[in-house]
Amino acid sequence: MNKILNKKPIKVLLIGPISPPLTGCSMVNDLVLANLGKDGFFEVDVINRSFPIFNESIGEFSFKKIWFYISQYVKAHKIFKRDIVYIAIGLTFLGVLKDAPFILLAKLLKKQVVLHVHGNYLRTQYELLHSLKKRVFHYVLSKGD
View 1 (cartoon, rainbow, N blue to C red):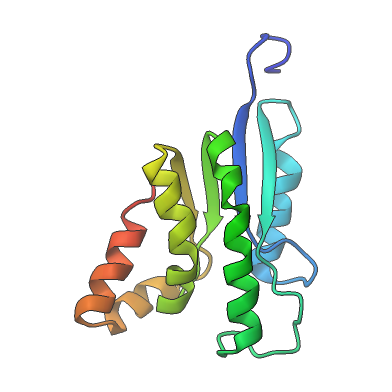
View 2: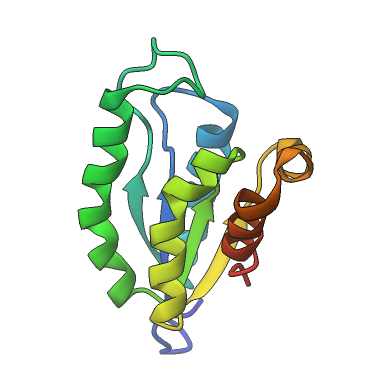
């Protein structure tokens, strides 16, 4: 439709897990990815945040995970060429913290940030936090449009 109207597509950067492995969040992101570009209105690029070793416990600390997520920050350059950053935000304090560099860079570059909140745990996590952690958590989440 956008091509018919001779308009440029809106450039979206999807940041989040894409299957495999198949999880609730990756299923939703797969669906978003499959449908956003259908009519030419959106042009979508991806930073796939699926941790490749799925036999480790979700939410469990490991140096492999830290290295994997830190190494993905080099892909943040993709934000420069996009209009919208769509991110499936983590639900824990550390999950929000690992996504914060993408969100803060996008806001610094005056990009629209869409936060995909999956599940109902985010509110519970916020209520469990205290002082500085709660303020950091709130600050990062408040950057969503």
